[in-house]
Image 1 (cartoon, rainbow, N blue to C red):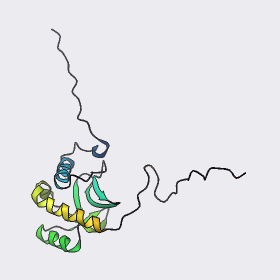
Image 2 (image 1 turned 60 degrees about the horizontal axis):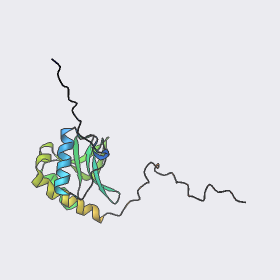
Image 3 (image 1 turned 120 degrees about the horizontal axis):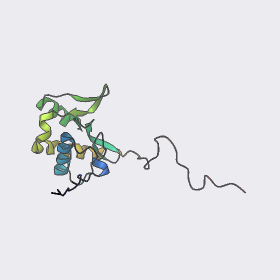
Image 4 (image 1 turned 90 degrees about the vertical axis):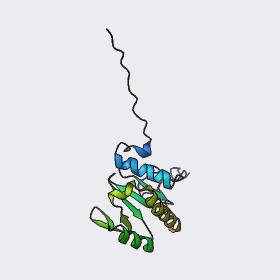
Length: 150
C-alpha cells in the first residue's frame, strides 16, 4: 500500500522578520503591529523600529526589549516597573529603558509607552541614512567621478 507524502510549506518569512520563529520576536512583532501599524519593523537578528534614522525600540539579540523614552516618561517607567536603563555590550543606553519580560505580553500597557516612544522619536533631529549596501563613512562615487578629462 503506497502512502502519499505531502510536503509541508514553511511559513513565508519576509527579509525584515527572518528571526520570526523566536517567540519573543513574535510577541514584539505583534506588539508593534498592534500599537504602531504604520511602522515597519526592521532587523533580522536584532529587530528594531526607527523613524528618520533614529531607533526608538530594540529587541536586543531577539531577547531583551528596550524602548527609547523622553526623560519624564523614562523616570515614570523605571519607577513603576522597577527596572533599569538598558545596557548592551557593557554600554548603558541612557534614553532606553529595559522592559521587564512579563510586560512584553501586556499590549495595553505597552501600547501607551510605544506611542510615547514614537512621538519622542518624531522630535529628534533626522539622521542621514546610507544607501543600501554602502559602508558608513565611505563616499559613493558620483556619475561624473569616473569620466576622464580630455
